Image (tube, rainbow over all chains, first blue to last red; front, side, top):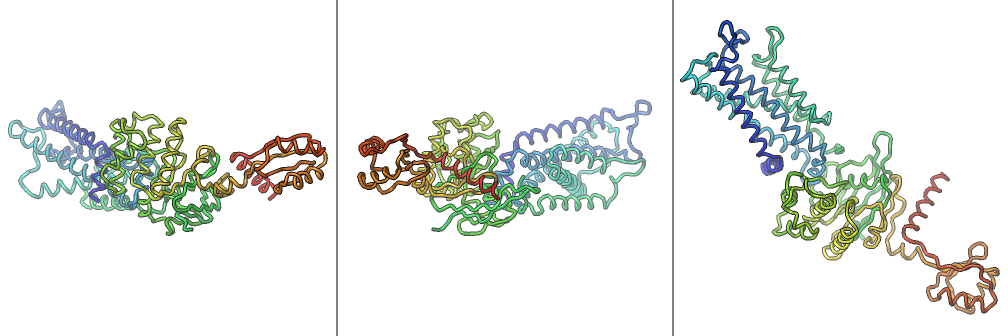
Length: 235
Length: 310
């Protein structure tokens, strides 16, 4: 399996994805730095950040923006690793190898999952680190509501990254059903709305059970994506 | 004789349409089997089912003596294939694509990639990304990939698309030497019979999703005999001359005073001379013979007549 994952990385422009992930991390870093220290989100009249009540800490925008962008990033990767492999017929080539189809698909999904998970985790660490470092020199407009000395911080960071990256499997499933890379992207945007948006005061963002449920559901969809793939015609 | 590939009543239906129906293929070990039919006859459909890309609606496939099930995949390691047009990772070089193929096939043999590239005359272009390849080069790279891991069974779906006549001959020679030297069994499809006529040991003719005939080339050569057809005013006298004066045994009276002479020992000149000597008046005389193309055309027409009669 490890060999299959490595081969997926080898043939799928990993340099380009690494570069893009780095670019994305830098942009997010700049943006959040500006948010915290340059006051771009501050209300011009009061000078206080214009945030949802109760979310005055800096971790909320960090989580929101990294989650949003990496959900899309992962979905793009899944679309190009798997959905376009069906449409440009390289999947037919893959299925001509003496390897179980399920194993091929799972290796492709894992190749994306591992890469995105590592990229997202590193990006978050970078952002939190930058903000923390910056706060020693300047006052942050947002509350510094995290500490990087407790193990709990890291556990939560890893878990949240895992949830976000796993969620993209739902988008993959939709893309596979509709044979469309665009559908993967559209679904990932809808997922952002669902998980990060709010209707009035109601939001699913802070429900404790919700991430767990979402991850389970995503895994079900991941399973459905490879279900009975051996017995189906490759169209 | 054990068959390396055999299909029994192989049928594929999509929606309400039978793409192919009751296909019975028998490919012997080591032979080159030409799968001939016009475009859209169902050749690719059959090949896709043999490679397990599509699953049969009915009927069975046996590969290397084992039945192919929807879940079979190990058997694919003994086969090399091109179905429809070969696909590659276009941003990678020709060499990298072949390397990747070896990795997935689990075939590691020093110098095999270089050798395959050499065989298909691609050594000079091995370092270029495949997206810069011409159609013919991609086709050749596809063939190189198909035979890279020394398959026991090679399945080639119209592999000569996009090749020039020189390239075509090169591929034919290559396949022939593979079959003779390595004992590779080759199933090759084409809509142009003459392309593979010279190398095939056996041909299967498919049209409209039905198998019309499966026949060894040596039998075809015997069946489509050339003959001299002579029309005379007095066939009885002519027959007497043929058998008594010329000692011929293999001739046949057809309609309207026409006689077909299959004996190889006599030339049209000798024949006309002998008949004239014996006062048999000749109204026409011609050497006739079927090409393989004619032969199959006839087969196809007969099939059509049967279908209409049904």
